[in-house]
Image (cartoon, rainbow over all chains, first blue to last red; front, side):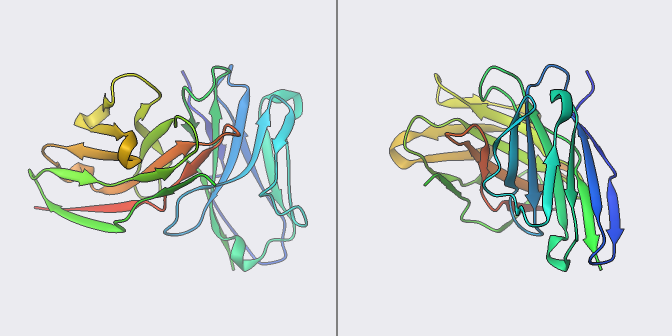
Length: 114
Length: 112
């Protein structure tokens, strides 16, 4: 079984530029999460999807961040424009319908804003 | 509010020595608890999880954790550490909204 796939693995951009991250969850996992992990910190939730619906986006900075999960499968997280403080690892995770029985994380995208 | 505290930022142990990483949580109901490991540049790998039942949980790579409700703790243990265990370890609690709430992590270094 393929795991959670994220791309790209690394991204370096100049501030004020846009950037997008892509995530393909495990087949059959209806819940998808985007987390941000700052250096030396634990991951923090940005947004949670149940199928194609964003059910928790309270921590998503909506002035510059957006996300979508068309058709309830893969998802894209976008930042526009990026700021220096957005440098972090962006992790995608998915979980099956049975609640809380398993969260699988992707390898993450390391974003550096210069 | 739900939260997780990992009191030790960095721990160094000798190879072959025993290990215990501390985790305390704050959660109003019966928690779902997890330990993840993260090697440099990698994603999070699940070591073990607790939902209910036996409070001593066995995981991968020889790790185990014990849930103690009275102490709101879920400490991770390993009887004999290997050099390949050097990584960062995160404790997490399953929040009421279905997401995971993580501690800040404990970095483990292993001395030869």
